[in-house]
Amino acid sequence: MHILVLVNTCGLMAACAVVYSFAQFHIPSNVLRRCVVGLAFGLAGIVAMLQPLEIEPGIFADARGAFVGMATAFGGPIAAVIAVTVTVIARLIIGGSGAVLGVAVIIITACLAGLWLQIYKNYQTRNYRSWIMLTLACAMPSFIALHSLPEAHTQLGLFLTSLIAALVFSFGKLLHGEQRRARRERQLARAASTDILTGLPNRRAFDEYARQLEEAGTEDVMLLLLDVDSFKSINDELGHDAGDAVLQGIAQAIRETVRETDYAGRIGGEEFAVIVHTAGKASGYQIAERFRQAVQVPYGLPGKAQVSTISVGGFCFNGKPFCYVDGYKKADEALYHSKRTGRNRVTLSPYLQAA
Image (tube, rainbow, N blue to C red):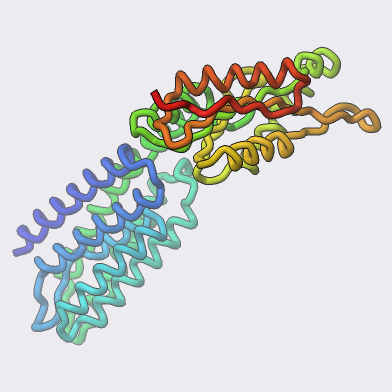
C-alpha cells in the first residue's frame, strides 16, 4: 500500500508540474495563470486524499500538504486560496473523525508556505536553505498531526514526512527553474514590444494590435495620429535630454487620457498613435480634442518655460470594419492638414463610405 501511495503521489506531482509549466508559458494573464495553478494543485490534493493510508476508521494519512504548500509557494495568495478551498471542502465531504485535524493540516501548511513565500519573495535569492525551509513548512504539519493522535504512528509519520519532503524539494527546484525561465521569456517579450524611452507599446506592438482588430472585423474604431509640434527646435535649442523629457511627459499624458478599451503606442520619433473604440462623429471629435488638450508638457528653463503642443489627425470607421492600411493613410493625411494649417489642432478625415 505504501508503494502504491508513493507512485500515485509522485505521478500527481509530475502532472501538476506539467500544468504549471504550461500555465507559465502559455497563459499571459497573471491572475488566470495563478487560478489554473491553484486549481491543478487543489485537484491533485483531492485525488491524493482519495488514495490515502488509513490509520484507523475516519483517520487518513496522505500527502495533501505537498500540493497545498506548492500551490501557495509557486502560485501566491490566489492559488493558495483556491487550493485550500477545494481541498478543505473535499476533506469535509470525506468526513470521519479526523476531518477537523485534516482541515487544520491544510490551513497550517498553506500559512507556513505563505510565510516562506514572503521571506523568499525574490526568486533570485532562493538556495538550498530556502528549499529545506519550504520542505519543513510542507511536511511538519502532517508529521505533527500524526504524532498528536492517541496512538503513536512513528513509522507511518516518517514515511509520509519523507515522501512530502522528497516531493517538495525535488519538484520545488524544478518549478523554480520553470518559473525563472518563463519570467525571463515574458521580460524579453515585453522588451521587444515596448518603447524603451516612453514605456508605451512600440510600432511593432501597435501594428500587431491593429491587425488583430482588422482580422476580427471590429467596427466603430477611430485611429488617431499625434505628432509633437516643432519637436526639432526643442532638440536644437535645449538638447536631446530635454526632447526626451518632453516625449516622456507626452507619453504619461497619453496614458492618463486613454481608456481601458483604447490602445496607444509610440510609432516614430515624435509620433504617437491611439486606437479608440467609439461610435459617432461628435464623440470622435470630442475624444481627439481631449487628447490635444491633455497632451501639453511644459519644458525649458525656469522663468522661460514653454509648453509643447501636438497636432492630431484621425480617421473614423463608423459602423464599418476597421482597415489599418486605409485608416492610417487617411489619418496621416488629416495629420498633415493639421500641421499645414497652423499646428496644435485636430483634423478628422471623412468617415469611410460604403462601397
